[in-house]
Amino acid sequence: TGHSDIITTMQFSPDGSKLATGGLDNVVIVWDITNNKEFSRYTDYILGVNSLSFYPSGNLLVTGDNVGNVVLVNLE
Image (cartoon, rainbow, N blue to C red):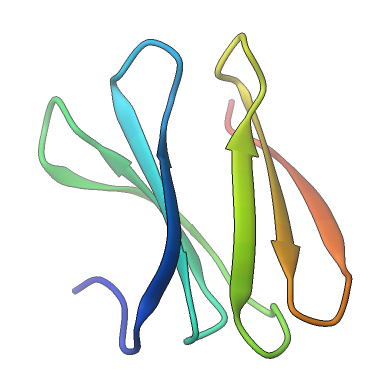
């Protein structure tokens, strides 16, 4: 489970219950810290994920890849 290549970015949600990770495997994984399990997985990034950030409410995650694509992910 988890990433198949180097993790390049990570951030905790504002309430600390989730951790988002992105890597060179073109995948973003949101982890449920309280249960120590994968919450959700997002794919189809190009040349790796280089940035991610939670919206202050914690229900949205903005992600970016290495060719300039920005994706807004609704976590609800």
